[in-house]
Image (cartoon, rainbow, N blue to C red; front, side, top):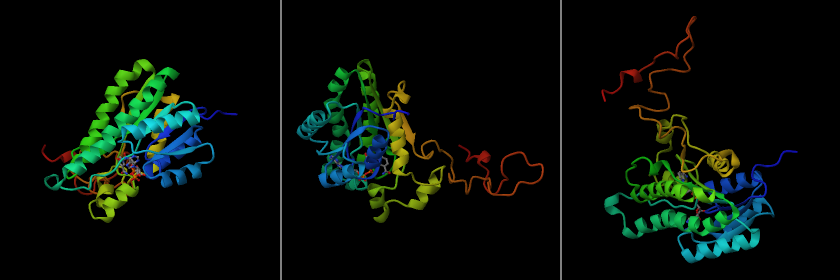
Length: 291
Ligand SMILES: NC(=O)c1ccc[n+]([C@@H]2O[C@H](COP(=O)([O-])OP(=O)(O)OC[C@H]3O[C@@H](n4cnc5c(N)ncnc54)[C@H](O)[C@@H]3O)[C@@H](O)[C@H]2O)c1
């Protein structure tokens, strides 16, 4: 009989009532962990926990509140005895408002949830993890924390802050056996992104065209990388920001990433004796743009 990779481990996932957080909770549970599912919306967390089975727990807390965070971490420790894995996933968009029109209140709230939340949660679990001999913290970054995306100032600054916190804490807490990593997803079709699409602030077709893999991601595709980083398979990985973005941040070409204008037609029938790349169609990327 094979032992599940996360058997005996306890995980706390924030913002697990919906979207990526729920997928992360599910994948961690499938791999043997007992999971505490946090959300600001307790009903959503409770529904989500129920779908995973009786071994799991739902807990309400606003991750930007120090008092909520301390109380929640105590509650999870009382219920499960320990916390081995923390996933800082809770997050919100910033409204996609032009910076000239952005309010200080929204800017501060966005940073409070992402940056303060990641700090408060990580600080609250770290001493216990150190006493246990180690643990794994996985943060949710974003392509927005790595690239400049107009009208997403607060969100991008928050995600860049999370990336740097990941590196700093990885270096500071390595001596305690705590590994700290982040995943940086591209566009993943969840409630957060659906809202941007329906309000006309995001064009799904353009995202696909800008992405080498030619599509948005699925929550499970982020969750599986988080589960890897949480496991012993990643025992020598710390301080890493792992892009899970279909190649979005790797791409720098001055044309459509999906291949439509890349100069090659992968579908073109090969001629007899053809051993090279698929045939040229239009623009040749080798010609560059003069830069
Ligand atoms: N969807 C994407 O394309 C995408 C891309 C990159 C990064 N991310 C990041 O992934 C994470 C999850 O995003 P999602 O798309 O699943 O969003 P979502 O809106 O579907 O889920 C986010 C969850 O967080 C909860 N939440 C919000 N504020 C909270 C708070 N203060 N305390 C506790 N819980 C809170 C919400 O109630 C919700 O259940 C976020 O950190 C987001 O920034 C998402």
